[in-house]
Image (cartoon, rainbow over all chains, first blue to last red; front, side):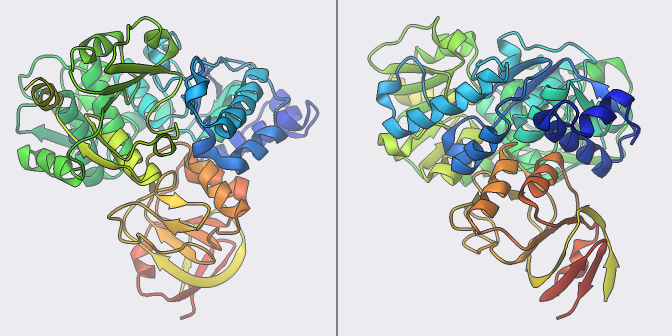
Length: 378
Length: 128
């Protein structure tokens, strides 16, 4: 890989150990993926914030590079705690969380604590090169915004943020974003949860092939539906971009003619709901990925116990009630839900269902939003 | 039998193979404190990676997986080495941080029946 004089200097350690580590990390990636050079990025999103996901070992690692400084706009994934009501969370957990956040803030990272940075102003436009972690945000940025990023791991996104560059490989390159498979959807999807299920099912089927999804003459997808579709695909595969015929920006700009073709219908969608059907009761847990204002306003109308999760920005604007609680800064996946007494839940998010079951051992049922509404109202 | 692969993080080890054709989620799918696969319904559910040469197609899911791979090492539960048919930034950087040899080898099914392999630089050799 070609490195400029300045990049060589950083690599040799002349600008300190932390920048050396960061440069080594992105150069290693570049070598692995055959990049020819590093290119500038306009922003980064860093994952690996909650003590629940990075553990003591992650904190130890962060302590080692704590003196590093980021050189581009960098936002942060959800942490494990609602910072406005720490008292509800286990004490030791909060303490560990505070140290992690202090380290990130010390590096110049904005403590946005959300998996939807694109909703709070870290919003790249078409063609912008970025280096993001957080799989659902990566898919959204590539597919819906037309920005360019690979699915970086937490540490590699951090390394890119420190240097302000990423190796030019994978989804940074236009040709690598072309779809390989045309997916004809043979059923009418009318619920956000079904879009999540479509994504999850597609990811399992395609593993790493990029889909061009044909929804027929259906109305335009909403932002919330895109959020679920992308989070679903990211959960079950390493696919980090999708296109929707006549809807997503790259599919609108050019002719796409994938060679393979598959069909997906009601049966595949229903299978996903069957895969996650272990609970009958429990609170309705919503906001994975973090809610938009529109979703939060809608979720307030649910009766029964609702636990909602959003960025601080959204959470601070939405009124709570006895049965509707909205947490900011954190989410159902990265907070210690089980330790807080929750053993079974219902959720319309397939990503949340997958991680609550596998990471937290919570009994989960994936439900359609309209089902939840009916069930709770009826 | 010997196959040429692409070393992502090279090393020399000999060990027993743990093989799967299902992608692995590191965060939530593997417990760094026990070394076991925990993803419900995964064909390796309940099996331990510790001391094995893990052969798998690719990694799916969370970008925090790099830290999980590092965590396996810190807890002494890491695989001896990993062979995957397609690498991505999450596992590549995880392997580099944890110093676990990682090779990319497109035709992993050729290792399906192998019990034991030796990895050295870019070579994978079936020895049992």
